Length: 94
Image (cartoon, rainbow, N blue to C red; front, side, top):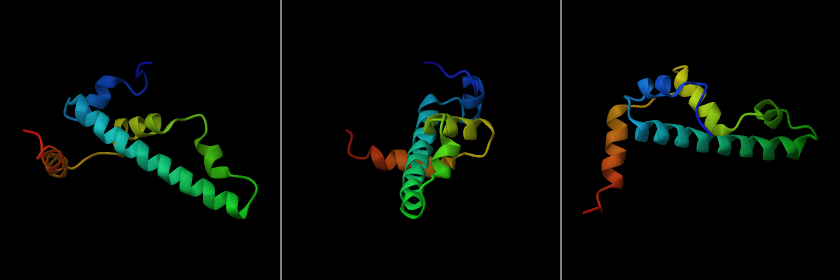
């Protein structure tokens, strides 16, 4: 499987040509999307028989949605926050 649309070059331009940053931003957003859809699905099915939220997102996986958001500029990151999070995760590594 490869990234065809959006093009990988476009995605890397949006994330300072850093593949680790691209993966980090996309995976965080994909998890958020999955959690949102799961929560919406449970709420909707509790009150009605037809789940239009899941139907709207069907056919697209959460990583593809996240990559599309990165490519069109609706999803970004704050460099200082990202750097601080990485430093915090790596404090125990010697």
